[in-house]
Amino acid sequence: MGFEEVTIGECRLILGDCREVLPIEADAVISDPPYGMNWNTDSTRFTGGNNGKQRGPGVNDYAKIHHDDESFDPSLWLEYPAVVLFGSNHFAARLPVGTTLVWIKRLEPAFGSFLSDAELAWMKGGYGVYCRRDTSMNGETTTRQHPTQKPIGIMAWCMERAKVPEGATVLDPYMGSASTGIACIRTGRKFVGVEKDPAHFEGAVKRIERELAQARLFA
Image (cartoon, rainbow, N blue to C red; front, side, top):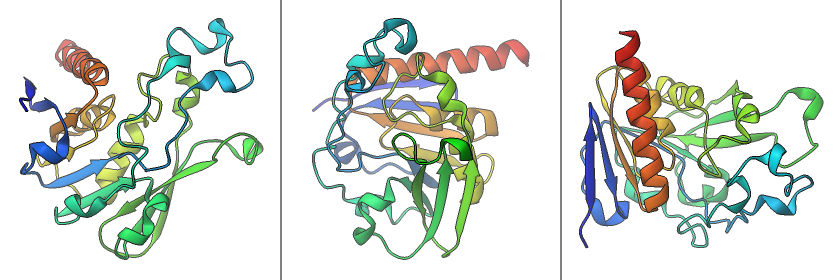
């Protein structure tokens, strides 16, 4: 199988199955992989889901997440020097003891009201639990490009917690909308992203291009 590859600045983006692209050299893996929960991405099942003005064009018709209907095996990524994997509560039995990172997605008054209040990530090494609140995705209901898109600030925080140094190369084998890549650009790190879905790959390329163009504009 051939792979499409695009290099933009210090970001290398690959269209393909990450399991077939390996080996990829990197100093860290920071990623939000498919959890194996077979999540229903059709948001029209929720109240207000068919309200185009509220939800925005295209938000209600996300495609299924590739391989989310399969059990996720994290073993391919555990040997990298620094690792952070979101969704760890879904495949905890396959992970060694490590640090737990908690992304708190909402303010206290909304706790318990709708879907999850927070998301968990496993970090290689240690054994503590660290939390960070970021409610920014609540304001991107109509603009997000991926059903499980993470805030750029949260991905940057993950790199900080994992002690990934400036100038290091970060690999996201399940790139999605490239939030990890943008976090790398903003924090002076190099990025390698792999995405299997052509539509999400195209969106990630455009998002990285916009970020770098904006960075040059304000340089």
